[in-house]
Amino acid sequence: MAPIAALLVGVALLLLGGGLLGTLLAVRGSGEGFSDAVVGIVMSGYFVGFFLGTFLAPGIIRRIGHIRAFALFAALATCAVLMHVVLVSPAWWFAFRVVTGIALVALYTVIESWLSARSEPIERGRVFAVYMAVTLAALAAGQHLLRLDDGGALLFALVAILVCAAMIPVTLTSQAQPVLHDTPRLNLLHLYHRVPTAVAGALFSGLAMGAFWALGPLFATRSGLIDSQIAWFMSIGILGGMLLQWPIGRLSDRHDRRYALLAVAILAAVVAFVGAFAGGEPGAQRLGVLYVVVFLYGGLAFAIYPVSVAHLMDHLEPSDLLQGSSTVLLLHGVGAALSPLLAGVAMGRFGPDALWMFFAITQLLLAVAVAWRLLVRRRAATFDGHFLPMLRTTPAALDMIPDAEPARGPGTDEDEDDTPPAL
Image 1 (cartoon, helix red, strand yellow):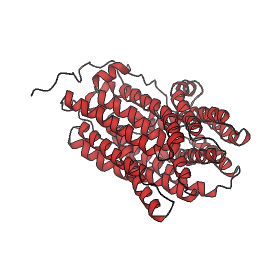
Image 2: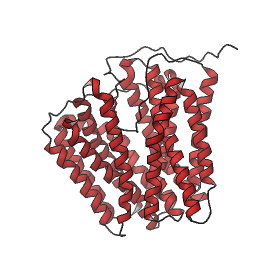
Image 3: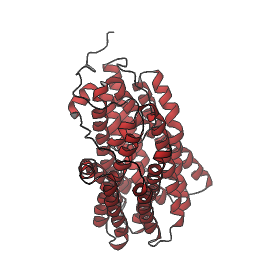
Image 4: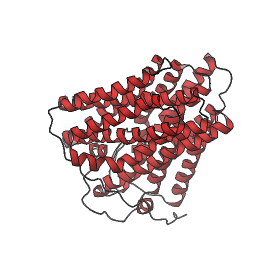
């Protein structure tokens, strides 16, 4: 692990800043008098930028190299972060969020493609596990930097410092720069025909997680939580995602993964309904209920995307795996870009608890989609895939997945048919 330590330090610093910035903007937007719908629009800008960056960043990285690209996009992200203090308006903040999303996806692409190139096939699983642990730990820790908020520019400056500091270990590394390869994508309709459950899981996971990251802090603010409690609210949700992904994934390895997705979606909907009706005046008892609810919901919701990817691995040719995974990743990004807008409008009209109702409806729709597929088609796994805890990340990280093989050409068309089961 020593050769990749500098890259892991770099991504930890990036996620400390990125995790703090998302929470900070939701809280500050509320403090600036932005409506819930407007905050949702502003926060969706990050996912729009993230989506656009997956197309724009690889070409720039290939043209100027990893280190120079990292410095370029770190400078761009730093400028965008600091401009939030200079120009305080929803339109400008949305634009800065788009720029931040583009810059950060490029920075993650640099690190993840470098990690992929530096890991031997035999140690990919270990590298991926360490990377995920660092990612989630940094995201959780970043929430607690909100405690330092002085109402001024301090935390924006801190985010900018963390992004700049991430350049130090990456630009100082003596490791050879890798070659960034294209990650082609399968046609969405073709992929849906082959593995519809994975497509549905990616989309609804994006809808659920985009709203969680963007509007979770706003819900906590509207519910009367102070900065330290908001930090714990978000970090406990992330902790739930860390701890519950593994047992859920192991369970999905032993059975048809669609049953696991169905169970997770139903349980997540139930937990979200509890969250929607856990109202009342702020107090220790209500706060405890919210912490339990967000831990359980985070643990269940975080597991949906990796179980969907594992289901994809079960039913795609190895040569199509990177293509398919890249496609569902982008579909996840589309859902994540739309959900802050939709959930923000609902919160503005019906109050903060509408966020939990949005979660519940999203999970119920996923459950219906999966249940329909179970009724339409019973099937066994075609390939021997297995679950790996993961977050939505960039296509470059897919190379670290031990089951993934570089795409060598178009795969076969055999997958799910819609023949009803024999009665």
